[in-house]
Amino acid sequence: MPKSSTRSPRIEDLVLRDLAVPQDGPPEAGDHRGGELYSATSLDGLDLGGISFSECLFEGISLNETQLRGARFRECRFTELFAPVFAAARSSWRNVRLEGTRWGSAELYDSTLESVRISGGKLDFLNLRSSTLTDVDISDCIIGDLDLTDAKGVRVALRNCRINTLTLTGSRLRDVDLRTTEFRALNGPDGLGGVTIDSYQLGLLAPILAENLGLRVEG
Picture 1 (spheres, rainbow, N blue to C red):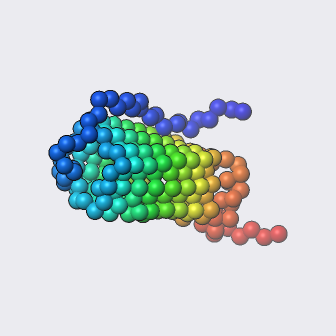
Picture 2: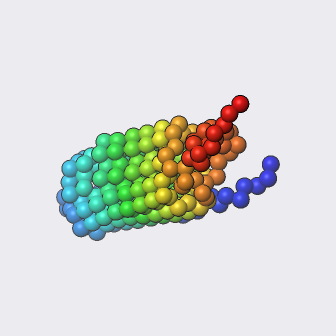
Picture 3: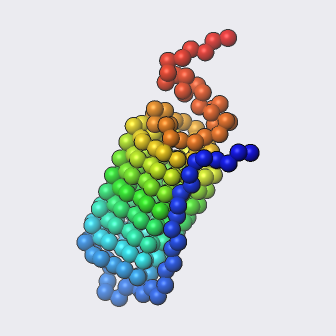
């Protein structure tokens, strides 16, 4: 089998050491927090707009309806993050791991993700409209709706995922690998440029592509 020419995401190493449990109360909007451990904690409903976290570990925390607009995450790991409503528009994520994430509606539009790995999660609606994704790896996730309208993506892989509806309207993609992912419906086939699929997926997409091009298949 010939080697694929699709470039894989380049995920940086992440090592967290000497973490401390916060002693000065819950974080607040605009804070700069570094080297901290948050475990089995609820931050539900807090206003954390513009907050910055670096080299932090979050284990089993709840962020339901927490306001994270404009938040920045650097060198962070999340395990078992729970949020029926995850409000993090215009946020920034660099070298971040999200493992076992459970999101209902995740509002991440206008965000920037770089060297991010999401694995083993269940996400009902992931809104990445107008976001920029560079070196992003999403694996073994169940996703209801993934909206990449007007998004930019370079070296993005969705591996062994199940997606109900994938929306690519107006997206600008390069080296985006969907070969091992199942999606039932596709909106915006015009955004498929720069996407890698396999021959089986091409067969499933044929009716959608034909309709988009105005083709009639008879006989």
